Image (tube, rainbow, N blue to C red):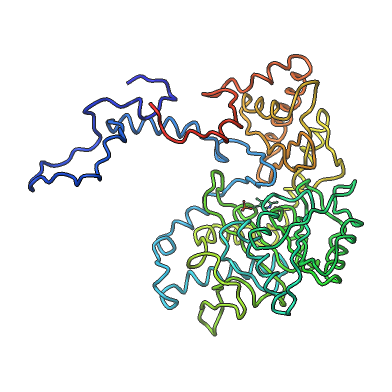
Length: 477
Ligand SMILES: *Cc1c(COP(=O)(O)O)cnc(C)c1O
């Protein structure tokens, strides 16, 4: 069969073809009950080899960290060491059932406990829970904890959460889901929290603040301790969005800088493949005062045995059983492989790589907040008359690079948010910068190349708004 590589499996169908050879039927035939046989589905009739070739061809179109550089800002798309997969696939982890009980899952609970301890140390927390399944899920848990803490003190009037305008969209979403009201705080000229606006917003209705540090501009907010002090003085708590821990591991402990409760995205900072919405894990860590409110169960040590316990005033479960255990195994393997000194070098190299790339890219792209960055930076794609960030992103695809995060954070117009991570080498960074500079040159001399991009992919420039508004989700012949 010789079809275009982008053919759909339905177009490979040919009446009577099949990929399974069933034995001759030796029991009486019974018709399928009416209503169960859905002839109108028109399932494709295909042989095994066509199916294998079809899906193998499709898989080769996949873009992944194992094939290419993936500078997607805020996502920390680092290389995932294969030893993590070996560890997560070990029979003892993979095949254990969550209902076998504590006595028969000592090893699994020990791993959870040891990972809790390692993350507690990295973040400077008093207690942690590995229940949440993602960063946003950890945010939700944290906001529930903040609300529960206020209520436990009989303070039911605190209904607002302050959120800087550079925050990830999940922050206001989590806050709203938890029944609180998000109040936006502007950024100052340096890209940090506007201190005057913060002070003006603090009153008895404020439950707390959600803060990302370094923020999504890739900038460390030097006022973090002062921000925490002011919020605490006003009776509120400080939530830390830890998605950017890649800049801080082994260097800065948020729990010691006034953060009361925080999530880590284990699938970002501590590896685990996470493109395409695969499973994640969102540890929540907190101060002694909030420890009783953590979601449970959490792993504990009782003498020489490991066990599971539910914190006294828990907000409840965030997830069935013990969270996404496979991701916990990967994170534990990663932490143990790097060790304490490796954790520090991780952050140092992430920051070094981002600053190196920033200096190269700045030759042709503006950076709105040009001070030294942490693990990522935000450039701007309006490099020539009529050229937009979207054009730059699409043209990068023609050169074999995954585009950075675009149009986020919202406070930078034409944002190109670039995060190289610590796992890329100098050659890759040089190659990426060279292509970005070449695209800037094209933008000046022949902008049509950018407007037409991508031209090397099976389909060209898509109507992304149309696709989102009027999705076509099934085959229509
Ligand atoms: C990724 C990210 C989140 C959300 O984390 P998920 O694991 O995707 O739910 C929140 N805040 C920031 C800054 C992020 O980069």
